[in-house]
Image 1: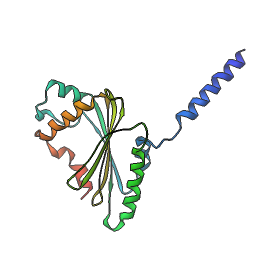
Image 2: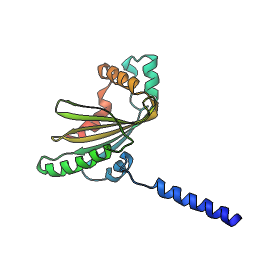
Image 3: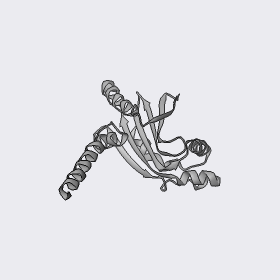
Image 4: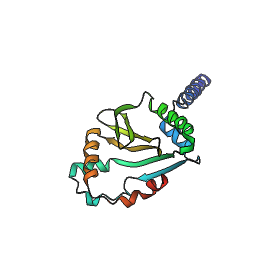
Length: 180
């Protein structure tokens, strides 16, 4: 009887291992596979490191901001003499966005940049927000915003407030320097 229970336990454990290792082209896998490649730059930013003290946030906006844990940023710099490589790399990242776990929130264009925003989680409590920004002139950027039960509606209101706020842009200079 003990041998039977042990065999069943090991079979279940083995099956769980195989299922958990299934590669569905996740954003995290894409980050890991590309972060050390020459045309890429990976940056991890704690949400607590960016100073929003001058933004004059309401209590609800402060609460929304505190639900953020970190930002993973992966940048790809396009070279004008190698647009085929850009197209190939961009096709790979777009295919990852087609994962069925991703809920597409919006797509828009502004100032020559295309943006795609998706989320992972339920409509009320999002655990991950994904942003893909692209331009054939400069390249593309992939941002994972990780948090704990983030509210999409509150995030949109917070982003709108932060865009109008007097926040010190020098905190993000390293990211912009990559594309120069």
